[in-house]
Length: 262
Image (cartoon, rainbow, N blue to C red):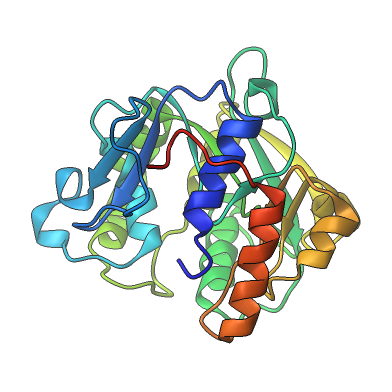
């Protein structure tokens, strides 16, 4: 975290999704110093408590997302979110689940060149499930993603790709050979266990009005599109001045201290 993203993310959740019952924060032998551990909704989960011991240390989000369904006491219905995801407007349960409690997965059409590890993983997963190369292909949006734990775990630990998912769990760093979680959603879609809501092209106005992802921390796009969810993704390439600017924007957007803070 460079601009205290987690703190402001929690503020945004308390303000706009007050119906959330529990928040599990995954850590690696550390606890954010601002967290109010007396708040009964907050649960600090160390990776060693749900990861295979011989798979640690691990710095790979693909690995964490693969094994996260093993977290003790995690609800059957849970929502995955990165620590830099902000809730910009009040959102109800119906944004994430249908009336019959199927997860609503927001996806977009990926048209960019297949060059980096993420797009390669996503591209391969689409080709595998479809049985052919497809372009443009489906990508889950960088957002808050709902799950049914038993369905998610069943695909990973009992399904056709069990060995590949196991290899991902033991992958210490991100790799072109990792399985990306879009594979789980594509399989569950074929089994009619999730609903895809397609937001169009990855950088199109329909997607940005719903879920905005800015790699260059362009806070002005948040003001322009006023999306439901947004991520400014402060990168390591930013200088101190830019980071302070983003933090100032967060503070203005979510000024009220949450009950999750000391």
